[in-house]
Structure formats: structure tokens, C-alpha cells
Image 1 (cartoon, rainbow, N blue to C red):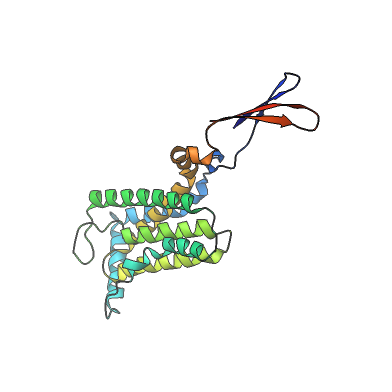
Image 2: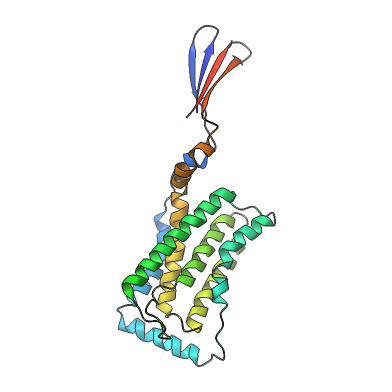
Length: 245
């Protein structure tokens, strides 16, 4: 916002007034944040061709199958638990990093990136599921959703307590294990899904200032237009002219 001040001496002062809008923040990108999701995705991708990893997938599946009495469908629900927890905690009065609008935009961006990535890769790889039900096993969408939510929960509440993030990631890991337990995914599917989920949320936070600027430019600033008002600082009097754009 630019403010022009005209004093009684016909002098003009120009003052740039800072705003507290999130659109003024720079995009914060840390390459170190790519390490864990990259390793997970890389491990999963390697499993598509590596005979050793495919053999290990089968060993894990066989070991789990020996101890299964009944399949469980908890993963259909736990995949959503981490990101829903953010809204639950806010409803209880435990405030996170962002307000309702900003965190919802971040979540929507994360979900869009994650969903588009997972579905695109599924259509390209056509990996057969362990139970033979379909050829869209790689990567695990349930796991991607869970880890996307876990990173979302961690980001929103890491300044409140580290345990929120730990709990979210524990639930996400459990979701991935249940996908293997229920014979719906290979271990490498789960690893790749976890990496995609984490990375999707990190990207959403990195681009959020830009997304906010594009979608909520008018709301992040005072109402656009011009205002004329009297000006007096104790020594000088004049007229102030404020222009928002």
C-alpha cells in the first residue's frame, strides 16, 4: 500500500506501508526436505524392476499371511484421520499454524498434487495387486493420503508439540501396514505412496504464498481504492492520500 502525505508546505512524502499478508512471504524451499520422500519413492520405483526387492515383497507378504486370521478394513478410515485431526484440534481450540482459509487451501493443493500423481502413475505402471484383483497396485493411494495428512498435521502443529506429528505419522504408517496386511499392496507400493504423500504436502506449503496471492489477492489487502484524510504529526498539518492496489 502506498501512502502519499501532503503537508502545509506543499511537500510530498511517499511512504510504503507493509502489510501482514501471507502473499508477501518468500517461497521457502529446503532441499533437505526432499531426502526422505525421495528415498521412499526411489525404493518403490526400484521395486518395479528389481528382482531382489520383488522377492522381498513376496517374503513379507508370505510372512504376514501366515499370521492372518481375518482381514481388517481400518485403513479405509485411518487414511483420513491425520488431516481430519487438524480440523478437530482447531475445533477444540488448539490453534495451529494457519487459519481456516489458508490451511484448507494447503490441504486442497496437497490433495490435488497427490491424487493426480498417484492416479497418473497407476495408469502407467499397471502393477498387479498381491490379491490379483486389479492392475493398479503401484503406488498405494491409501498410504499416500495418510502420509499427506500426517505431514499436514506435523506442519500445522510442530510449533505446539512434536507429538502431534509423531502421532500422525504413526497412524499413517499403520495405514500402510494394513494395506500390506489386507493383501492389497506390496511393501514397495506402500513406500512409494508414503513418499508421494509427504512430498505433496511439502510442495503445497512451498507454493502456498503464490496460491494465496493468486486466489485471494483482494482479501489479503485492504479494500482497493483511494482515501483522502487530514494529516497532523504534532508539528506539521496537511492532507493524506492513501491508494490501495
